[in-house]
Length: 549
Image 1: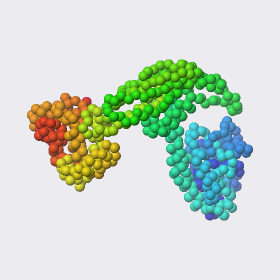
Image 2 (image 1 turned 90 degrees about the vertical axis):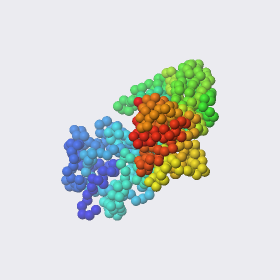
Image 3 (image 1 turned 45 degrees about the horizontal axis):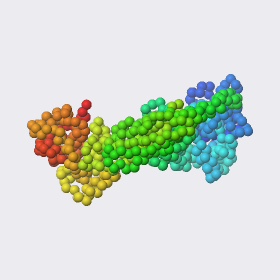
Image 4 (image 1 turned 180 degrees about the vertical axis):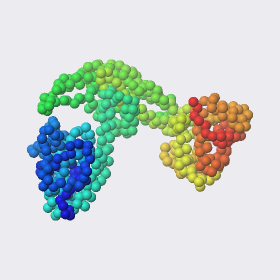
């Protein structure tokens, strides 16, 4: 502080947790218009100017009441005590009066005070609908940011204060000034709480959109079995059939306007059930078409009969799921055995969210899981797990091979990408890792060889459905292209289109190497091998194939 006793606005405003009574007495008169911008940035008004805070009832007052017993600041309009110890959002300049020159902002150097400051920042919660914040219950719980000029001169410097201020986060971010670990933990906790609230909403049957339903499914699918058991078990036992309403009170904060005893009675009379398990893990699937069944026990825990109905039991694409019985009624204090059956239709894992609805009650979620050893090579195409890539539905293994190929290809890649020999041990190791779903190799030639092996080992070649006469009579590939586009069934059409588009990309990346198109006839068809090679050559040179409509 050199020369004059002033405190700048940028130093004062971040510390919104003042609790000193004398500070309030030195607030000067605020501007008449709340939206009016200040013409002078330094807050340099002196006490000699004689401006005091006007607390008359005709004008709005930021701090017109102060309760000394608790140390809380109250709203001037209704005397309502706020719930947050710090301000939850930045205020405009017009919300603050000018500070007394006898008070200056200083740094906090003691470890105890630093700990107190950190604890205050950790208590920040988002309450954006609040009109004004509440202050801490005592000045001792605040960081010592307000001191007299004498303590300032004998203690910290303004530069140190500004450094401390620079570390002070906005209240919205809730980042600790001592690091971001607290912020990460708080965000994780907030996410878990939000997820649990959404799940409770789903259990009460209060989801209002398909986006919420999808989010609930994703939350449950991502949880491992242990956490899933804990979470669903907690939801089953703690969620009320209806949301507990907020109980309004009169202006004096005393009389309750809702009959809670009647509310509790209504909650207890709602039908409730208990599931014997919430996670069905069928383990490893041995073969496609294998029928696996598990038992589920439903117990009526309410005071009346419970009517139930299962949902999510229709065909889910890759598995057939059924419940026996799919609906029924359980008497008071009774129970009923049910059977859950799954039948795999393709080579894919099962992770399905199902639920049972109780009439006039809640929705009870549970998850079905199973896993299957991947059979990527030598299996019929219609038994493989598929994925949609750019409008073409193709087996997942092709997309994985493509990603590994494009990830590792470079300008140094040898020519004849699909024709070079690969070490057999390296090829076997890469194939083993591919079955495990791991990132298995950095050699693009290995990925290229495995891609050709996949087509070669199919029980029925992809282009065998195209008559050899069509391939032979089409010197420029026109007839074959028309046949593929109009008559070749799925998924063969999508796979051929996907392959041609990949070869075009590889040719462009590898200096327009025409050898990339060679040698495909013997792995795509059992007849007219040379004609098939010419067809692939024409297609790659002609341009990409669009998905069929």
